[in-house]
Image (cartoon, rainbow, N blue to C red; front, side, top):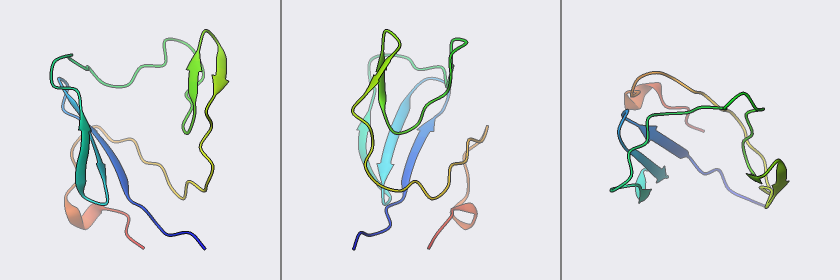
Length: 80
């Protein structure tokens, strides 16, 4: 069977960092990132979108999603 993975995408208003199980795996060091925007389109998790066409879907289960306006303390993380 599969295993539970904690994924966190953190944006401080300037940079975005992606963590998997607490390890930093990706960041955007040169391009500013001001947060999440939908540009008036549906908000989608688990796939790519280009010119209104969706592709490369995520194969698995997404157990919970939270979008918050501040960094969470470790006691606020959703853990198994």
